[in-house]
Length: 215
Image (tube, rainbow, N blue to C red; front, top):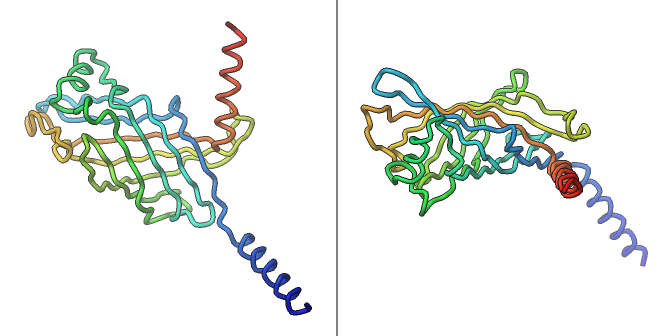
C-alpha cells in the first residue's frame, strides 16, 4: 500500500514538473483589417507598379520561450488582390494568364522553420512553403517583430506585429506571362497584426452583437 502511494506521489510530481517546464505558447489570430501583403514588379524598365492582397487570414503560434518553435499559417483569397487599376484586377483574377483562380482560389503559406534569430534587433529568418496556382515552392522571408505585448484596442489582450520581405519569381508559380519584358521577380512586403485568438473572437462577437442591435 505504501509503495502504491509513493508511486502516485512520484507520478503527480513528474506531471507537475513537466507542466512547469512546458513552453509558454500564445495562439494569435491574424487581423485582416491591419494586415497586408504588397508586391511590386518592374514594368518594361519604366516603372515599378504594385498590388496588394487585402484579405489575409491565418494563425500564429508564438513560442515565447523558444521562438524557433513558433509557426504561422496564412490563407489569402486571390480575388482580394487590388492593383489600384480595375481593368488589371479583372485581368489578374479572371484571365488565367496569371492566377488560375477557378481551380486555385486561394494562396497559402505554411512556415517550416525559423532561423537566425537576433533577439536584440528582433530580426529573424522565416522559412516556409508558399502555394500559388497549386504549385508549392520553398521561400525565405527576412522578418522583424515590431511589437509583442498588450494591444490598447483589444482590452490590452496579447498581440504581436511583424514586418517581412522576400523576393519570388512569378514564373515559378505558373505566372510567367510577358517575362522578362515585364519583370519576373516580385518584391514582396508584408505587414501583420495579430491578436490573441480568444480576445480576437470576443471582439468579433461584440461587433456582431452591436451591429445586430443597431438594425
